Length: 81
Image (tube, rainbow, N blue to C red; front, side):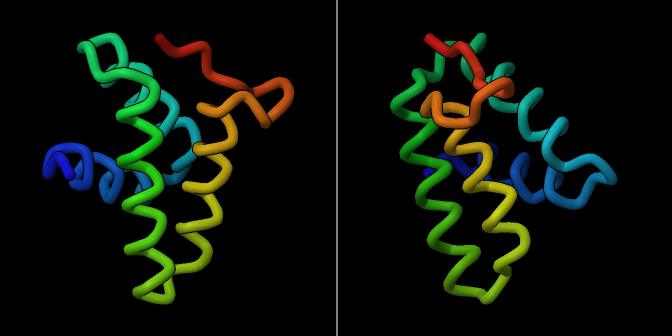
């Protein structure tokens, strides 16, 4: 997994508005050429690590992001390439 991606996720999760920080980060990665599929793979990997560390509330936020990237979060979906 991309170390920068993991560090960026950790930073976003520590923000006052983690969902907005994550949305911005994901759009930025996509604009930099990281595909939707690659982003989903990395999000799933981080989600598994968070669950393994019993960081369930943070994993819940990340799973919302997975839904937004996948197109299953009506009204908040991200249109990625």
